[in-house]
Length: 416
Image (cartoon, rainbow, N blue to C red):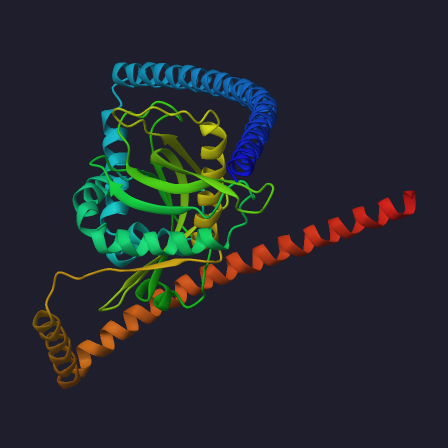
């Protein structure tokens, strides 16, 4: 019996050794293949980065040359103006200049104030307004965002965003090497992103009064970090948990858990925002396709990574998270964020009562109401005429382009 037991033990020990040798050989083969794959990918990425940097440098040089030419032209114009003013002073033409200034002042003074207000506050009512091209820089808006950001981005909002992200990541296709990816521990830093430009969207309606009162459609350019690898402070940090799976000789035979912490160090987002004018408004946000997101791995204190392919795994996780965010927010999809008003229900009721009182006073004095209506209708009719002219010109241009495209297409067919 003892001989049999000893023989069985030695055989079992030899089998375990062989099995262990096979597993180690398989792991070494996998690591070798991953190294080859990562080296080839890194070479391609370096080549792409070099080409992109060359193109950027060429564009920057062109812009600098254009700016220098513009500055030289402006200096020449200023010199010419100074020479003209000197000649005017020598020829004693004070009376003519006074008359011209009086005429200009009279034009600005006696212009209708309602037209000036509309042109100042609602530039999209003009004749030749081009949407997307006329952008405004808004430093005052950035100061407001820095104050309100901590109140809007609360812990409840972050939890809801975590749930949405995890559900969206679950729908994404992940390679068999990794198991499911989960996002947790979302945290926001003290640094705040900046709005570089704002412009009105081209969703134009003929009903001008409805466009002014109901809602505003805006396009924002949000950016954080001047360059892709120059930001010191992170806006958002989160950690992801996955596991490296061994699917041989049986699927899900062994798994190696991995936790990586990321920081959102650079992003350039082009957002489409709708702000409705209601008592309980909701801000709906959607991403445009020309947006960029970049994450960096955060090293923790006392950390020793024995896993050599961290960069490759982090890139896979980065791509899956970006695709999940794109599916959630990218057009035509959107996220609706409820805006909590500081006014209480009693204050809102008081506002409604004041509006009703004003309506009752207008009913008692119909003459004032009629004068207001006539003035507004005159203004609206003039602006509607301007918009109709603009739309007619646009339709004519469209027909001309369609005819040209059709002629080019027919000429190509005849050549073939």
